[in-house]
Length: 283
Figure 1: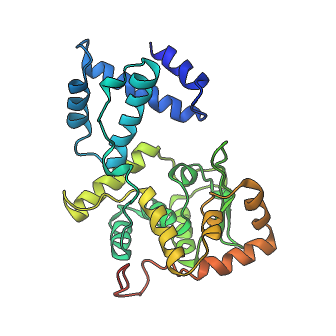
Figure 2 (figure 1 turned 135 degrees about the horizontal axis):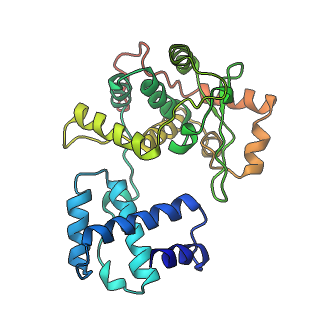
């Protein structure tokens, strides 16, 4: 059945284009079926599973499960009644959580070592997607222009380079030196799920069970908010975060284009750990 579901995702009219997404959908259903252990599949059983396994998880994590259930039960098995009315909570509501400056600072400072501090700061400084930074190797850093060359490029998402500042450069150099990394080494040899788990645990420890759970995606949102607050036009925010068409991105990743992007990027003043006492999102 799971093989048939995988083939369906690849061939359906609303097909899933990325193999990683297909793999995630299939794995989510496999885990549910193993948990069900032969019990009749009902809507109540699905709700019980979500409450038991994902009730205390980040909203986006639960939403990903619901998406998989919709593709499997509603679309593949043509059993829409099994998922009718099962929502994805606030992960799919228009408003996403944007951390304050102080929350971003606290999260980075709470990370256990230089490797994790550098990664958390890199998400905030570059606005890169979670998987993009996990693929970065030491040789992908252009220290002269203070950019990281990203490898992420799919049919729907493009990436070129991510800009950073002196504060992150200092932390990256310290981490690379301490870890003895070579040019071919990955900076952060973590899995995406491992990163989200670490961020969730740190957030709960910092802000309590009812406080915000800050994820790499939330730091990407903070990055875009800071750019917008500084008056950066939307089209440049899209370029800096790799959302613009590939042709537009390519035009700006020339020496002249990078100089223009650098001037725009620095308007946001993304300093986090250095002395900017009292500056928060609400100030």
